[in-house]
Length: 91
Image 1 (cartoon, rainbow, N blue to C red):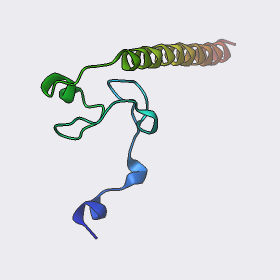
Image 2: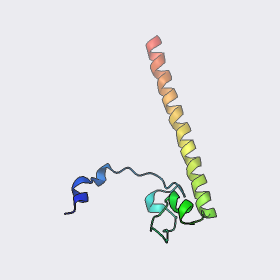
Image 3: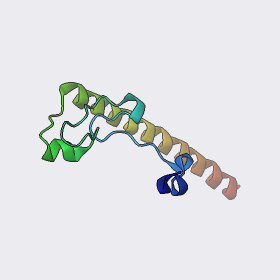
Image 4: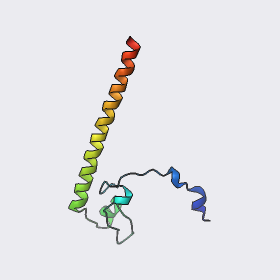
């Protein structure tokens, strides 16, 4: 067993969308960097000459729109909950 396996717990990993295409790891459409092998790493686009494709730009825009819609829904939920709690206290 390697040292990294002793200290790393995959169950604690959090999954975040790719910074370039906005997809989660299983659906990332970013190419592998020919220089370092990274995928979806913004540094590869800055330092290794990768160019963001139109498909990646559209995918990221879609992710941002979905995130904004989710944020609005979350805000509605919490505002409603706060109103319910506030209303219950005043009665």
